[in-house]
Image (cartoon, rainbow, N blue to C red):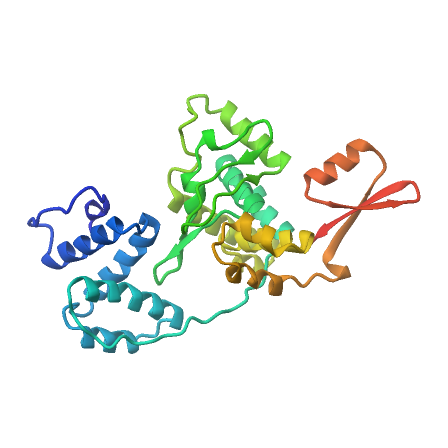
Amino acid sequence: MPKESMTWVQIPPPAQNTTPLTYRIVRLLIHLKSKGLRDSTLKPLGKRLERLSKAVDLEKPNRVAEYISNQTWSESYKHNVVNAYNHYVEFYGMKWQRPYYRRVDRIRRVPREEQINKVIHASRAKYALCFSILRDTGMRILRYSVAQIVKPVELTWLRIKDIDLETGLLYPGTAKLGAGRVLKIRASTLAMLKRYMSTNEQLSTNDKLCHKPEKLTLNWCRNRNSVAENLGEPEIKQIRLYDLRHHYATMLYAKTKDIVHVQRQLGHRRITHTLRYIHMVDLDAESFIVKVATNVEESTQLLEQAFEYIGPIENVHVFRKPK
C-alpha cells in the first residue's frame, strides 16, 4: 500500500497510481480510525489486507477463507489476518462464515541480563541508549507482519520533555489503551542520556529520542548476530528486541512478587496478560550473581547495576541479581 494512503488526513481521491482496491482499504482504515483505533493497530491491519489482496479477490469471502486455510502461516498469524479481513467484510456489508483459528500461547525463554548487555555494549551510543531504556523500563514494542518485524512504539513516542533528567523518571505514552505509568531508568542509563544530549545540543525538549524505529530494530538484529558469532554464543541470536520487555517484567516479578505492580508497570489493561510472567520466573540458587561490598561506594555501584541488597554477613554487605 502506498505510504500516502496512511496519512489519515482524508480519503485520497482515486488517481492513476491508486487502484480501486487500495482505495477501498484506505476507506476502511480511516473509518476504523474514526472509531478510535490507533495507528499502531491500523498499520499492521492494512498490511495484512494488502497482502491478501495480492493473492485473492477480497470481494469473494469464501475464496479468502479458503486461501487463508491453505497457507503455512502460524495459527496466531491466521487469526490476525482473519480479524483484519472481518473488518473489511463488515464495513462493506458482505457476509461470510468466519473461520476460527486459535492463538498458540507459548512461553519463551527469558534472556539473561549479561546477554542483553553484551549487545548493548557492542552498539553505537544512540542505539545503546535506546536499548538500555527498553531494558530498564520494558516499554512496548509493536510487532506486525508475517516477518515478525518489530518497532519500539512507546519508545518512538517518547520525547525529551517526557524524561526527568534529575531523577531518571519517564512518563511515556502507553500503547493499546493501557493505563498511564511512570517508569525509571538506571543511573547508568541516565548518564548515557545526559552524554548523548550534551553532544547533540540542537535537541529541543519536544524532540524524540528515536525518529526511525525500523533502524533501531535492524541495528539490534545486526549487533546481536555479530556478538553471537564473535563470542561463540549462538543462543544470543535468539534474543528478539521484544524480549527486553519480557526480561524486564520477569525480573520485576521475581524481585517484588507483586503481580499487580508488574501489571501497572507494563501498562496492561488486563491482569491475565501479566500472569504469564509468573510462569517465566524460574530462578534457583544457581541463577544469581552474588557480590559483596565493604563500603558505601561499592554498595552504590552494585545498586546502580540492579543488584538487590540481601543483608550484612560478618563485615561485608551481600548483593545479588539474576543472571
